[in-house]
Length: 158
Length: 284
Image (cartoon, rainbow over all chains, first blue to last red; front, side):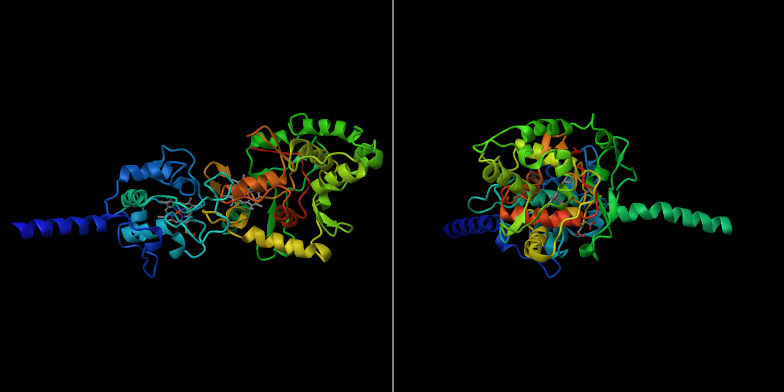
């Protein structure tokens, strides 16, 4: 009895440590820029991911990408490719990698890194034009990335 | 057979400009029915391998915005030139002089000036923007206070001076003593800034013609400055626009009038060498 209680306590502690979000600096990319492990340790919420993609103050992905499934939101840009059928082209791990730091997949791309906090020139305090104060937050949180990955995974043509 | 070949050629002729100009329309700009604007031109030599053709931002605007610039009665920027003309003639400062005391009729003395600025100033030994020259005239020449950098009064005077060169091709010098500043400006143009990690080139060289949200990206040319922006219903200076663009990369901006923006202004102006001076232009 006593022994099994102890085991339980230990496993809960270990479990919660594993479930904590991976910090931007600790994200492990494969050679081709994919990220295998969930950043938050939690499943993503596709509906929330769709909202993040169309919201100017969060992902604002449609500023550059056309997405037919999000056609009710106005003004899709075309700086990047259309994301229709993107889940046929990329696995979940690859999509997570593109979102976290697209430059690991596409060298020199203009797509911003959504889960990166260092290595920038003159980082600002959001869109104020003033210098950033203290450490930067990533553009999207670990869970927001997972939510967007979950939504992108639904974009299948086949 | 013959018919088919012709159709193919015709189709090519139609589709080729769209590919090359990336969505710039084929409209022409003639102001007041008399000033023919060069809104597309072969790129200057220093851009060889980078751009073939340079295109005014006017082409990326809607038809409604475009026509406003074709007639001075419809161009809201022109009102400011009248205000600036009052400043031109007003005695100001301890020396009892106006701009006109030294320069006479603005229509004669300021013709061609806008097309060659920024330019090297021999006595000050640095590249001067029109704004720096105006402020020197105010303080040293007239004993008056300098105007606020990129402020409303300054923008209006720049509009008045620009109007005297409308239609003339931009022709800033980039060699000789200006070269080091130009090189620095070029470096700044290609430096990615902010948390979005974008350079001027990311938007205006790699993606002009494309849409970013509702914005139709132009080449970010400065030949139309100062521009009247319908969005905020006032004149915007070159440095004001640069500041907004840098801010939009989530970066700490440079200040209007800073050495960085002066260098960048020279470099960006040189990318437009060959396009007509349009200021004050109308943009959204």
